[in-house]
Every structure is written in C-alpha cells, then in structure tokens.
Amino acid sequence: MKCFIPYLPVGFSRQDRGFSALELVVVLLIISILMLVAYQKFTNLAAQNNLMAARDISANLRYGRNMAMNRESAVKIVFSVVSNQYTVYLAGTNGIYATAKDPATRSDWIVNVGMKSSEARLSTVSIGGGSANTVVFSPTNGIPYDGSGLLLTANGVITLQGGLSVTITTNTGYVSVPG
Image 1: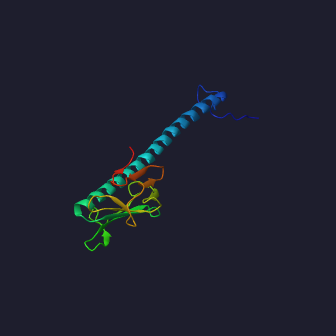
Image 2: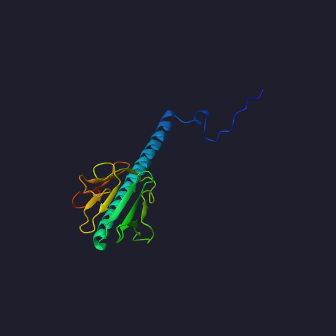
Image 3: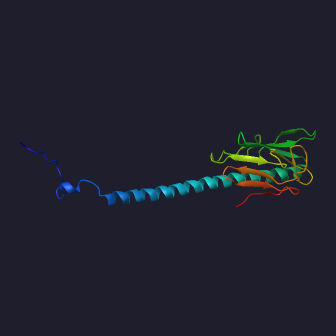
C-alpha cells in the first residue's frame, strides 16, 4: 500500500505548513492599526466638511447682510432643515420678496447645504428665540429681525449635525462661526 505525501518545496517540512499564533496576532495588530488610522482620517474629513459648510453659511449670511445695506432693500434668508437648504430673498421696491440671484452663478440663490459634502446637514435653526427659521436683515443698518419682523431677542443659531453652529448676533447682525 502506497502512502500519498503531498509535494513540499525543498527546505520545508510538514511542520512549516501553517501560521503560528504569534504570526496571526501580529498580522491582526497591523490590520487594527491601519483601520484605526483610516477611521481617524474619515472622522476628521467629516468634521472638516461640516466646518466648510458652516463657513459657507456664514459667508452667505454676511453677504446677504451687506447686500441689504448696499441696495437699501431688506434681505430675507429662509432655512429648511427638512430639505437641508436655505434660500435668499431680496425685497423689491413694492416690499414683496423675490428670490435673489446668487452672486457667483446669477441663478436663483438657493443653497443646498450638502452640495459640496453629503455629510453636511442642518440640524436645527433657531432665529428669534424660538424655532423660527427666517432671518431678515434691515436695509439701513443690517440689524437682524425674525420672520415676523421683530428684532431678535436672542442670538440666531444655525446648527449643523455634529454640533458646529453659526451665530447671528442680536442688535448688530454680526455672523460668526467657531474655528
């Protein structure tokens, strides 16, 4: 009776066919370290995307405030958490608002917050002390009002998922974002 012996390369014995427990632990440790580094890069990227979105919102609010004073027409900005966007309106000479034109594209000024990064999402909008979603900048001095035409009694706050927020200061309309 013949016994079949599988082919082994020269210099290997039957004991060299597997991996030792130490080798497996080292490989798993290396894979874990690589996954940790990749996870940190991903979470940093999401935070950077939220910061970029907050800065875009801040820049558009400032531009709208300046536009109100330069054109001597009220500017209204309406936020929608559900659709993750905001629209900028400009008051006409008759006091009726029409969608303003985006200064860069000359199309209707409707901004999708997640357009540059799908991770960026509006979480809450609180303008006028409640959960109101509209800010109006005065044409004479850029002072912010809520959607009802009342002066802001508390800072307006637009918060993105992840906790980063844009603040509109009462009495001045100054817009700030951390970082």
